[in-house]
Image (cartoon, rainbow, N blue to C red; front, side, top):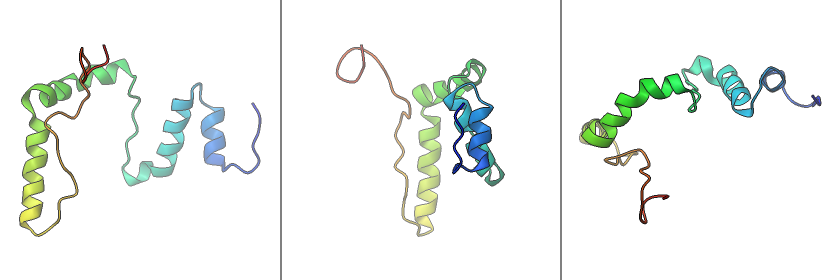
Amino acid sequence: MKSVDFAPDVFKTAYQSSKTLSEAVRKYVHDLFGDQGLVVVDGHDAALKSIFKPVITADLFEHIPFEQAQKVTQELEDLGFKSQIFPREINFFLFGKGPSGAN
């Protein structure tokens, strides 16, 4: 692997110890911001996807995250804060035939 003299050690360590670009990015982002509470996940991880299925289902069919976000946004606006988010009923992309999908 080619060495880059000007790169900080956190990047060198992450790239040299990783098999993929996404693994390296997760490592250095965790090293830089992990103590701030930032969580970095691998979106392609099968176990994560399995655990996340109920959240996706709730968003797609029950709109629970939308309702929660609307409620908290309204509470903040009632306190005099300007809304900074504009929730949507569904926060995932739907694929299918026609202009809204990719088939």
